[in-house]
Image 1 (cartoon, one colour):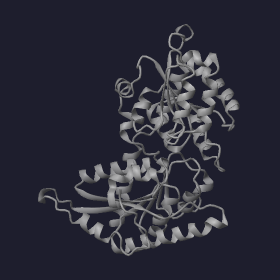
Image 2 (image 1 turned 120 degrees about the vertical axis):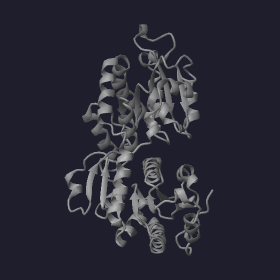
Image 3 (image 1 turned 135 degrees about the horizontal axis):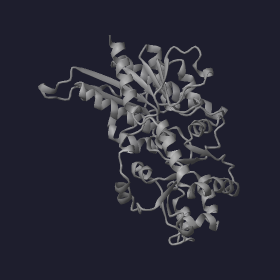
Image 4 (image 1 turned 135 degrees about the vertical axis):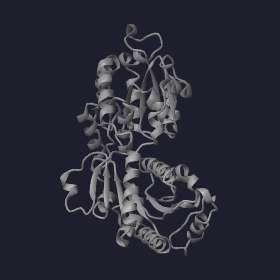
Length: 421
């Protein structure tokens, strides 16, 4: 585990960057140029996974053009950041910046963390040439992108949600290029200095490269059965978990998943339930009451490529990355947008898939019984209608942008080239 790098310490990265830049390379492969890119964002997988996809695409393109790429992460000390960014070693900066919370008691910790983080990046940009900052959204993206914009360093903002969040609204007018998953509403695009391009939300290329046969073997599933995936993203979603467990008490739903009791052969389904680590045991215990139901409960899954390769239908949230993966992989969906955000930005994401014909929306009523009734209405028909599901899958693929990471990497390198000239 890397040492926490606090911005108020003197020159914490100076030795690191000098050491990394002086690594010997064979004369035949000596890069003609070194590129330094700061990927700013963290705190959730929704911010990190798109950034990791872009970072991988950048590295591939830089290597192909005989350039040396150094990537630094302006992230947080949260466990998800540590898990996903540990391979970056001392290039993973755990900023003390905190979310902006409307509370007098928490205002000072926010201001202190913000100032410390900005001070660090101001010093860092003074010491070492940085070619651009890629802001991945969220509060962790703020300090590096803000300081870079003031210093004339190109800022490229990834805004995969249909509605920009608080941090992204702050960065919109400070960015030289804004990359979105869907076109932004006119109210957000007025008086911007940067160009807006709807290139999609970057996903890891391996997500679309797994065959159903490979996925079934890796997950221990029957590839001859249709598969329903239930997921609330990496942390799980209690309201979705609770609602489906209520639905299991309904025999008309349960029959589709019971071995040998599949409504006269009209349905033959199994379940992959990504319940979240904290809720997995309770969900397993609930399924244990129905031993004939073919289900596998997983707390956390690193192999979403296999999950989506097996999925014939999903019940899911509508985070930006989830929507990008569903469309790229052609998975029809019943979406329950996260109901606890004031701006309901997941509802706006879900509406994009609804408009494309790739999803059905169920509003999360936050009560298991009400949610169960609403989900059942949508689910029952989709379980037994292959034609509708196939139409939705085709619509999802048409809306998908699986090459977004490569296209975004090309835009970034193009901008770096323009700024260098």
